[in-house]
Image (cartoon, rainbow, N blue to C red; front, side, top):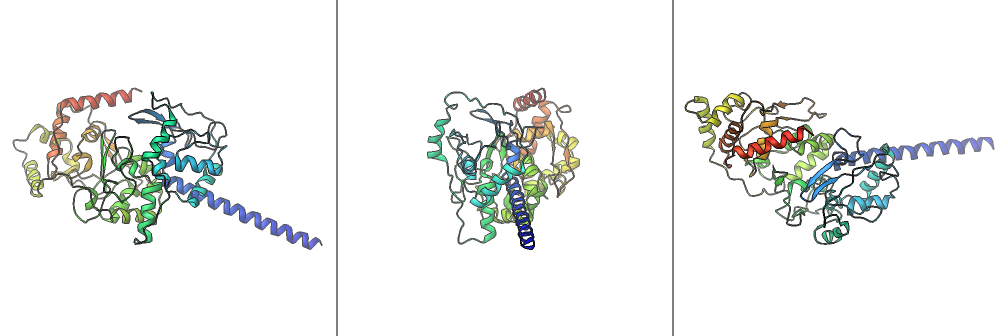
Length: 425
């Protein structure tokens, strides 16, 4: 009899261990899915505790503060059931029935599978430490403070539907589509917004999907990458895309603006297979309308003029004195060190805000597991006047094969004042 009880006890221990391991595996999978969804970037205030909320998200409607999504039962989501958690993530409906604003990308998260949602719930309930911290209250002006109005927005604009694989596409393409359209919510930034501030498309059935636009004045490039040559990502191969997502840099470009958070907190943690799947999928999307460019011969003309260093304009002189050592007279820079300026989206975008901001404030690539070194560009706000920065930006936007508009002293002054105001807070 004792041997039977001993055997049952041993079996119980083994079963308990197996269940514990299954639980750990589910939590680990959920942690990875949270990385894919870049949850920590929005739900963590600068310098704050991860997932404790409080990050200010500036929108045309006003400032929206992210919520605490730790399992704290009072200020977080500790009292949420799995069904309530799923409704919040996929449909933008809180446990109390109130509606979230689409700063939370639930129109994209609606594509998350049941299996991934279950793992995500397990991670946030069992793999994240609860933080007893209330987030600042979002208080938009009327009528946007009436959250019930989101019922109508959702009915017209939301596309919270599950992901549908393309039977004609490979497993890798479908995996890439699932990540880009769903968890990665790439369209939140890279798809132009309509009059209701909705994304104009949520999948590749529309040419508007991932065709680029602007975000807080910064140009956002198209991610429609099919092709082997051409401006922007159409001239990148699959490995270039993988490198950029994993390291924040490749042989053409270096990350800047809002995308730095995506690289630092999300894509740099993706496994090789998922990075490759995203690249393969993006290379299936026919490119958006090409940006206006000059003939290729214009690149040589600019390089020759700078190399001769005779009768240079103010912008050309400023470039030679401050930029030429790293980006060179041909604007090609150095692979994975100094990004190209010839054809760069931050240079050629309709808005010069990103370029001016980078010149004034400088830039730095994030340190990632596969690209730990930080490439730093100094800011020139203390060295160059508004006139000099405007002349430099105008030159770069029209040099080589670039063909973008001029920049005024006034534009530079406004951005300089904005940066100074931000630094004082």
